[in-house]
Length: 69
Image (cartoon, rainbow, N blue to C red; front, side):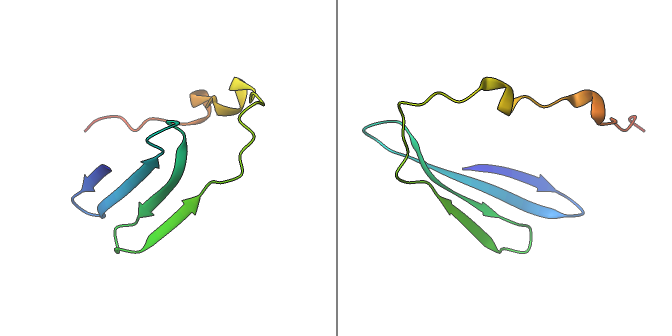
């Protein structure tokens, strides 16, 4: 479980469920600051196919970073 606490917004959680035998991601649940859960389940995967790693790259130049203050 990964948890992020923010004073003004509240707490968000991410729970990952991974298969003990194969180490594959089986499902994950996101809990928003209001306490509502959204669960995603993954099944019938074809593990023989490889995904393009570029699908998971984020171009951070498109995002501005607020200056500390």
